[in-house]
Length: 473
Image 1 (cartoon, rainbow, N blue to C red):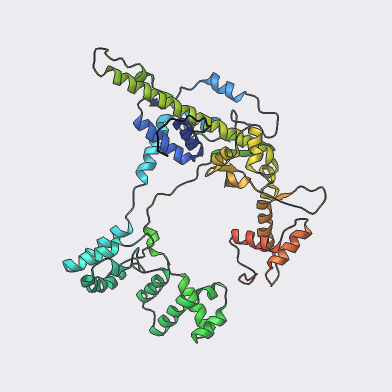
Image 2: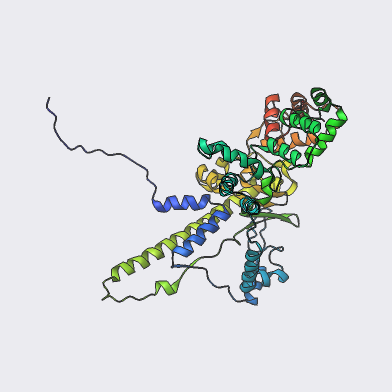
């Protein structure tokens, strides 16, 4: 049978995502901080985008906004009126004095000057010592290898060739004697011992301290001082003295020079109980309003210019990109607002009375009500926060699977509510013997919550609570 060439026609269905739809999903999944950075980057790149100047104050407009009727239901959206936000003494300075806001921003940016890094501080000290060029080179190499904690990123001996290790290792103690004490160590244990040496601890005490740090920290954490004293062959009082001294040391000495920028949480939704009623507000204050720059779109080009088509195409593409971004940000805001209203409906008792009344809730329940796919809900709430009367919490924490109750007529309870109960039971226990996981399971069973011992153990670990063997009460 000889091979031959031929054409064959087939029909198949295939789902593809357009670049615009992919970008829409990306913006929906962004946190407020990420969206701020995205908007800033787009404004710098796209001349068709602009932030409109602050509007002038209009008494009629303010009166009209404040006279809008509040929602009749207990979980309506009050984005038009919020007594805490629209107080007369705050409104003019915070919302209409753009120059004052700019001055405040400039002041804050000027005040937050970068402080000296750990490496800069150590190199400055190194430069004050009388050292040979090879010693300065080795010292600089050791310092550049330190992480934010002040520990070696890589083993020091791996930084140089074998014929130069002698010079590097002879320089290591000199770097370790620089301020702060405890730097240039392999880990926190070696750092603690270096700090003890710097404090000129007596030889016998230093020996006991070194063994204690390497072998008995976990026992000390559990207050098993008698066992430690027996192992070290010293008195229990002496162990307690060394332990008190250890608590005065810094296991991560380099962190005090860590000047990495702190990332603050900006909630996307704000829920407040005002006069016994819940009010929802979408937090868009940190995201500037974007518009199309009419000056850019009205640019005239000479048709006789040989670059005329390229210029027109550039303007059209810039406007199209800007319009899509504005639309996508508006869609993100509308989606978050709809999800917030659904959360008010499903978790009404939680917002009013606290975490104990958090109801079981899944992404599918919200998705069905909003006629969206549950992956869209998951993408929208991931990495976003909600500001409530009970604190700023991740929105995904309001979703929790259900645990069955044994009491007839009682609704199922959420995992988060059960975890809160476990935490409260352990905190309020007044007995001398710590509660075991089985005992906690029995106590929850008496309250009508069916939960196995291993489930209690799982939730306890999530809460970072030690087992009954390790707890003192």
